[in-house]
Length: 134
Image 1 (cartoon, rainbow, N blue to C red):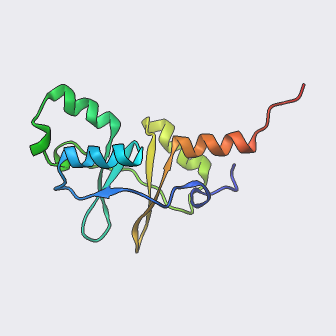
Image 2 (image 1 turned 120 degrees about the vertical axis):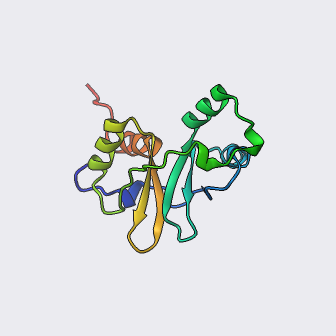
């Protein structure tokens, strides 16, 4: 896996919202697209935060008025990201170390360019490693 890079596994289609997006609208985006997170980006496509299904557990538990609450109130703002040139093993190590299921992929000039998830890593491993016939 040392010669496999994030760019080869990441999803280039990412769903984004702005920091002012209402939590309810972000949830609808996630449900409609069957995804576990939305990346919060600024006007320059820079990662400002990430909102995941785990965050929605906290939203419900704290019982704030969902329709009137902006994403910025719940998103994780100190987002750890990776690049397309990062070896997959390093990205996986980062995800395990922090307990992440989603790792935004960024480019210095373009900003957000993709997302690598535990599902991407699992799919890769299931195709690379075949069961031992013995």
